Amino acid sequence: MNKQKNKPFTQLPSHAKLLQHFEKIKKLHMRRLFSVDPHRFDNFSLQQGDLLLDYSKNRVTKETISLLCDLAREANLEQWREHMFSGEKINNTENRAVLHTALRNCTDKPVYVDGKDVMPKIGAVIDKMQAFSEKIQSGEWKGFTGKSITDVVNIGIGGSDLGPRMVYEALKPYHYKNLLLHYVSNVDGAHIQCVLERLNPETTLFIIASKSFTTQETLSNAHVARNWLLDHMGQNQKATGKHFVAVSTNAKLVKAFGIDLHNMFEFWDWVGGRYSLWSAIGLSIVVAVGVDNFNKLLLGALEMDEHFQEAPFEQNMPVIMALLGIWYNNFFHAESYGILPYDDFLRSLPQYLEQADMESNGKSVDRYGNKVNYATGPIIWGTSGINGQHAFYQSLHQGTKMVPADFIVSMQTHTVFQEQHDIMISNVFAQTEALMRGRNLEETKANLLSTGRVLSGGDASIPHMVFEGNHPSNTILIKKLSPHSLGMLLALYEHKIFVQGIIWNLNSFDQWGVELGKQLAKRILDDIHQPFETTSHDSSTNALINYYHRTVGRRA
Ligand code: G6Q
Image (cartoon, rainbow, N blue to C red; front, side, top):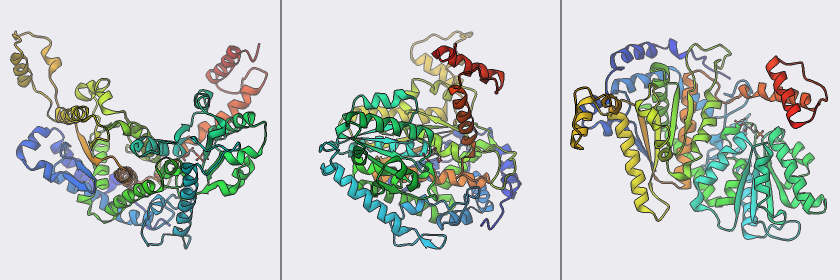
């Protein structure tokens, strides 16, 4: 379907202009940019619904933004965006459409895949999720021994875990109080053991969330859960039907596992795993917060989808964020990108975005299979900002690496602790100000004098207290963390990632890089099950396998 073949972005006319422009402004300090333009905040900030993006603390001028927007135009971003929203098969290596946006298309507009409108079946699955979750919440759904459900365990991994788990945590203030959700992803038995030992099998329901229903970790955990249940139910196989439901695209394997297809919630191959929380993969979210809140999440994402489709690039939040990322990644050669939430409910957002971004754009061949000769997706990392301040911010302020970062802040707290909230807010604003301004030698000396310190000419500690500043950051203000604003925020990042993928000429929707390890693990598991010494790998891998065997006493 690829109507136009994009050139490598480094061959686009604006790229050459950006290189020249970069030489001119690369040393310009943001202090200067702020001092010459008292309206810099107004000129470099955007508001859309519940979100405000302040990108004034970036090493850019109006010319930078204008050239970067030209780059996006030359990369045919408008056309690619249209291809995605209209269901063309832009995931070319898997021959799939990319339609997570259809899942939140709460409008009358049809969306076609292979000539068929997919909206009716999306609606039918949401209705089914609603009916199911209402039965769980009301207590109408009974376990095998006739008791209502108190605990729901989502067993899934990667895209079938990170999104729903992050949203579940983020929407804690909206949870039903009579139900507890748990998320099991790791095949390390410690994970499921620690969850199961706190649960009563009579009142526990498992959601097996797996698009393929072949994922080793998920299936292995699902079997452990089923055995645990059956051990408590006298091995009566009928119990499975009352305590297991599935979310999958693979009805055949769901049935083979023993789950009634009436209890399977369907989604489709045009929903990528890491983009799937809006689909039936969000079942645990619906169970936790109800379908009305889930619909608000979808509506928030829809608002961002519409903004992304309609706003001119210069005023388009995901486009601007993507272009700033490219500016640092490909011109300043920053290798990583920080995600720093100042809202404890968003503590899993960095982990979620690690997958969303790095699995999408961590690639070294372009969509046509050519090796790229420019940097693609950065390393995404982060943690709760306030905790980070007492851990790694030293390096952000005075280290030798450039780490652009997003500071994500909720304005209104869900708690009753307003003073705590004010302290947190003062900290985040202080951090971005400090990163931008820094503190020069004169200011450092003046600061020391003001504390009563007597300065001698050779005071060796002074250079350690100087901050160069000029460290870029975005601040994203959320009015209040709610299903709607969370939906907007997540869609913002999805589209940012999409835009970057288009400019880097990548297929952001496949993930071949996870396959090799999976294949080798299967082979090594066979070796581990053998009674004899392993010799078929390199000497390191052989030795590790054999050492494992000796340590756990499987071989002499
Ligand atoms: C995401 C990836 C990957 C996937 C998991 C789980 O985009 O495809 O993270 O979600 O590997 O896969 P299943 O849902 O098929 O178990």
